[in-house]
Length: 267
Length: 267
DNA sequence: ATAATAGTGTCTCTCAGACAGTATGTG
DNA sequence: CACATACTGTCTGAGAGACACTATTAT
Image 1 (cartoon, each protein chain N blue to C red):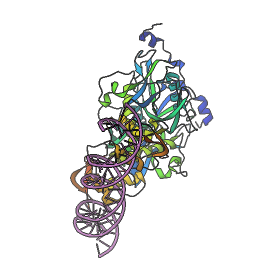
Image 2 (image 1 turned 45 degrees about the vertical axis):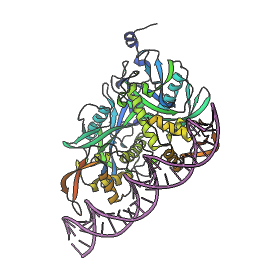
Image 3 (image 1 turned 90 degrees about the horizontal axis):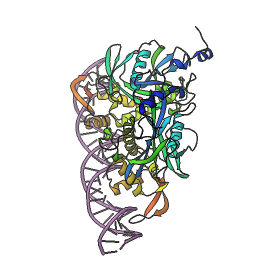
Image 4 (image 1 turned 135 degrees about the vertical axis):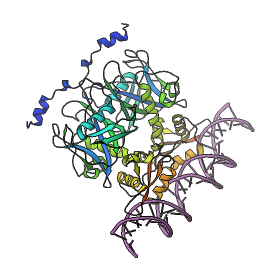
């Protein structure tokens, strides 16, 4: 009766448990042409062959969840995430490379989806991740996917956001993208993560257009500027300027702050 | 080469995938004696026998994740969650029964933990849930656990919250509880979920003490009252009063609002 | 009476929304 | 020049922090 832990572990039988698979799916969001967009792959194999889906796949034996998300993203889209230093469990900023060129990126866990019949192959639990990246050239397809491209959120059928027309996605990926967009909208209110959508240096106009694309509505330029500059650590001036369609603008880089106190609330 | 989806599914072999188990763990938070507290069970079997842990266990074959969380909670603590109507995928309010007496409750997914060696038995992915319940009598142990009790958060060793002294928890449960507390603190800022910690009718003093317990600092009574009453749909007066240690107080019930605009920010 | 909590009123400061106006580039 | 965008200044109203004061119970 009084069994040791070693004895217990030796006798433990994993085969007695239900057969489940664990996958990760990654929602890579970016802003391009003034619109919020998501990176999708067209499925080369069954199930849902030919339909558009989130990049993702099965988690391997001794692989962390974040690690699996990064690996699948690379395999299917060519997008490479470089982890700066250890601590892979939290949603801290990461650096992203596409075909060698380095950009900002942010990766965090979104939510886990486990409805029993969501995958026709077997019981699959999917841990969804959310990444914010700066605008980048269209990636190339990896080994597991036929085609890769960014889709504007407005061109997808996402019931939760009230968009019923548009391209239908595989599995429950429309729901996942919808949750990701809502998370992104909320994150922009309370954190400085808008800077993850722009290049390393950026103008306040570029930063404002990120907010406008994610929230889907125009912001007042002067008030936005006042708000951003009055929040310590949100952005720091670099001293250089960048040309625009009008007067050249000061360039800024991301500051040390992570959370916005007080937040910038959606209008 | 051009295989039908039926053929593909018939040939699909789940045994080729790594062997993984999926569990749910539930962080039940409540406020008792002015302190934020969490429901823990003392483990009756290996691994971590004798240590305190979150209620939870393996997800079964055709069972949704939310459903598994509720079932494990009941088996280990006697706490029964009644789902009001369908729609079990989102973090909407639910009703909770302990030994027959009904109370409010709220259940939502917290985050998924999947570090490769977090469970010595095998690779285990745990989907953690977060529940807010009103103060209730101590539950009784269920079949799978020796002892059940609420622990004040301040009496646990939670590194992320800066508490290094106190009871150590099994697995990575200290990290999970820490994340849950941070989520709860944040939710009280932006949502009306503080009402999930009190009875169906409550005084503004009781509601304020929820905020004070979760945030760990006193709030200004008059300003809190003004803020809550000026937010439409946060609370509605019932017309009756309740005795206190001083002047009797008006009773309120939860209103229809879910999110707070603008939020009540932590001091 | 005092203690304790509920509830009201008000001053001030910060800050967001609105808007006007100036600055500096391009065609 | 017109046009586009960057940037500055100011008015106003909403709301949070601080504080004083009144109300209603128990002991």
